[in-house]
Length: 74
Image (cartoon, rainbow, N blue to C red; front, top):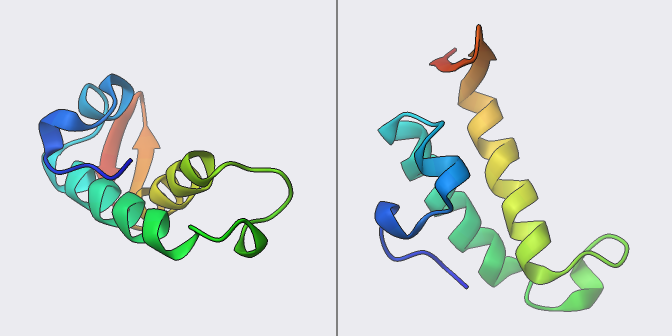
């Protein structure tokens, strides 16, 4: 289900990503949640939630990279 606030994000996101990256994650997840509601739009047997999480992480990785255990803006 979509996330209304940053506090609602999974712990793995909240504890690892800086606030701006969390905002990117939330917006990308919510957008993908809506876009991939139709199973025919998803690749393989991925669930709607799994697809939205993959899209969200890809969005974060577009602007951030992990260096020495920390997410740093590119």
